[in-house]
Every structure is written in C-alpha cells, then in structure tokens.
Picture 1 (tube, rainbow, N blue to C red):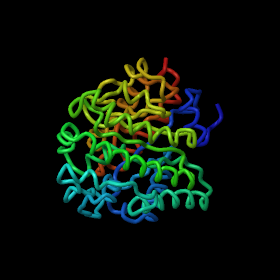
Picture 2: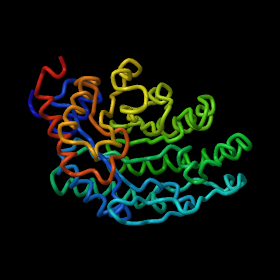
Picture 3: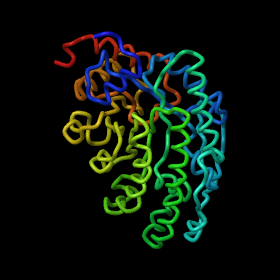
Picture 4: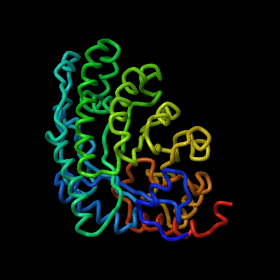
Length: 339
C-alpha cells in the first residue's frame, strides 16, 4: 500500500478501512506554555513533527472552561506541574442559579480558540495538514470542576438548580465548539469525568450527564469528521458512552474494563488506546515494544489508533515516546503480528 498522509490514515482508521500502518497519537499537559496560545500551538505542532504523530490532541489546561465560570486556579507554569484549582466557584447550592451561557470566545475559551487558530495558521505556513482536535469537557464535568464533590449532594437535593446550570454550560460548549469549527478543527476530544459507577448510577448519569452530552455532540457532529469521547475513571459506563454520536472512543483500556479485545465486541466505533499512560514514563524500551505488540494483537490493524488512555505523564522521556513510534512502525510492517 502507498504511504498515506496523516489525514488519510486517520480517516481510514475511523472508517475501519485498510491503513498503511496504524495511526499514532500522544498527548500530555504542557503547563510551561499553556497560558500562551501561540506558544502552545508552536509546541504542539513541534511535538507532532518530533514524534511523527498522526493527529494533534489540543492541550489547554484542564480547568480552562471552569475558570471562565469563576473557578480560581494556581498557575505554576513549569514543565511538570499542571494548573490546579485553588478555590471552587460554587460553594452553596443556590449559586448554581447564577450560572449563565457565555460567548464561545470569552476568557479562557477565547484563548483556547486562539490556540486552534494558531495551529491552523502555523500548519498552513509550514505546508502541513495534521488533523487536530480541540479538547472540550462535558457540561457535568465542568460543573464538577466548579464545585467539587458537593455537586453530587446538590444534584440529589436541588436537581432543578443543577439542571439550570448544566443547560447554560451546554450552550456555552456549543458556542465554543462552533467557533472552533469555523477556524478549521478536525473534531473534538469530548472528555467526561463523571460517567463512572463510583460517582453516579446510570440513571443519574442519563439525567444529568448524557442529556447534556448529547445536546452538545449533536450540535456539531455533522460539521467535523474526528470526534472522540474520552471516558475517564474507573468502573466506567463504557457501553452507554460508546453509543454516543462520535467517531472514536478513548478510555483507560489498560486498567479499566473493557480491554481492547473486549471492546471490539461491544462497539463498532474506532478504538483509541493501547498505551498505559501511567506506566510509560518508567517503562524500559523492550517492555514498550512488547506493550505495543500486545495492543495491536488485541485491537487489530483496522479501526484502531494507538494512543494513551489519558494524558501521559509530563515526565515521560522523549526516548520512550520514540520507542512507541518505532515499535508501531516496525510491528505494522510485520504481517505475522496480525495473523
């Protein structure tokens, strides 16, 4: 097969078509540059070129959406210490009533939109066409970032107030995502952090999570080709979220059920995973090759993108990421791996 471009390789994987090799993605937080949209765009493009990545998963700081609703954060701006919440925005149940829709270019949303504009602009100047996806958190995840674990008590005691807030946050998400579509993103990495049985029942998630997730995803699903749902946490509601109107599913497949082989039987979506993000930074090079081979054997050659199950450690050595890339290329050239 002729060598594919990154975009061709991603589109083939999403469509379960033959690929010249399995696509590869990698991401980790970049707190030393994530407060500067231009610097973040430059760093992400350079990372994609350094590791021959097939797509860019944009890495705004994890609280960027909640910060626009009053979450206070501490910004360390060092390569290995991510932004962390300092003071929650919601401290009483009544304060959910103060949450209202925001423009898609307001505050940190605007800074993150500028990063997407810069990735598109800088790629054009360099003659690149690497697919890039914007990171967006689910409305319920944003609400949890605003209030912490008290959200679950508020949800059960004053559901109407929380529904109001979630509806307004969902509108903000749609506003922001439409702005990103206008600047040329390939899709969205839609991250959920509450779809776990450790936090909620499935009925609760359908009411307070899924309802608003679908409002957001259905508003943009026909305008982009590379939309991903990321299911964060242990005891995840995999079957529920893998039914979403997205093109690919990403979860902690190396330590949360189902594994890649089991997931093949439970969804027809493209699978994204295979790399244990909590282990990669300490792994030896021979261990990495065996790890990649196992992932390929579980997932197969088509309908699969090799990625971490979540953010890799910021302390992952460059040689370990290169080892993943090199193992993937070598193994994809060996037809016996998929026999």
